[in-house]
Length: 258
Length: 220
Image 1 (cartoon, rainbow over the protein chains, first blue to last red):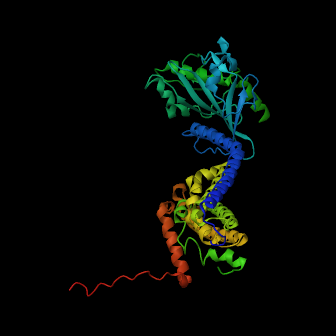
Image 2 (tube, chains in turn cyan, blue):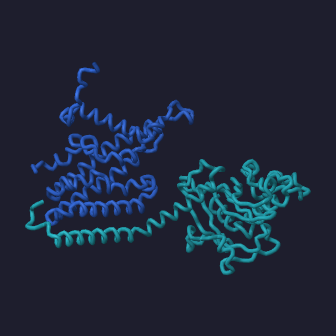
Image 3 (tube, helix red, strand yellow):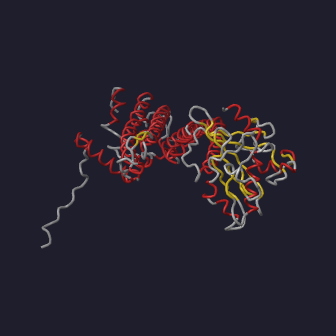
């Protein structure tokens, strides 16, 4: 350490320290700034992963989220709109903003939402060979006295339900709130969505139809004492699978993923 | 300082002067990141990089470095390197960096890094210092990898997340040793390794610094 003449003068100590600090600060800042976009992308992907894991928890825990894709879909055309980052898209805010939403025609408004956003997020879980395994849709609708929010999982063929998970509702406790009951939700698994003519037939049997036997394979049981909640769920599912919901998008999936 | 061949500088810290088993440095991180082999491998890589670059940089400025501020300057360099490595991991190995969590940042306080900068790089040329850094990093890595492999194998029945033994919960015959996933097991394994190495290399055994006074004449 005594290799230089007077290495221990205060001025020298200050000078060396400042120089080292400057070089280190420069290095750290350059690296941090240049890597930030990649890191942000990681964090966004992680947020989406988290969301989907939550959606799957309890219903499809074994599903792997490794081959997960998030997209924003323009609902009217059913095409991906990659100009919107799925991690930044806020469906609820978009539905409340007149510029980014559209009024739902009365006769189509089964979910009684009045407006819906022009876009929606969809998540696709792919198999290792690239085929779509599960389509994850976020749906909402009006129940008896609250807004219902749910994850609707479809199989890769886009015509069979894998699961419905209602995660937010404020229905009558003990009656309407039974839509959150896993046993009730389990009835949705494997139900076909369309009949042979391609008409959406899936729903909840709430005792309205005379020909309910004919549609038994499309319909889950209603809930006694919670007819309006069950109709809310029915409307929600049918609206979002229908032509004003994800219908065009699902149509495209069926065409490209035979 | 005596001159050694570069090969010796590189290989000596593997067993003969292993920072973990001879100098007992860096135990803390060795406990934390060895629950599975992949984290141990990544941590090893981080430590090798930081040690090599840190030793190299300190060696480059050693003649300019005033004695009074040497530690703070070394720590500044090491901390910057660790932050850079951490940032790179967060960008390109996000999943793993989450699992390593704070332990990448804590490489700053890993005694091996500062220890080698202070005791070797301050007195030796650039190339020798870099080699010494790599060598010590590899010595640390060697122990981490052994411990990580043992803990993952007996704790989960897998290696590098590939299931080798089928656990009882999935119908197999292997009962996972959960103790292996807890920090004490790393102590046991490192302790066992130290014993084993000193058994093979008795010159590593330290002389007792003081001897216990034999109890005098019992209690008469």
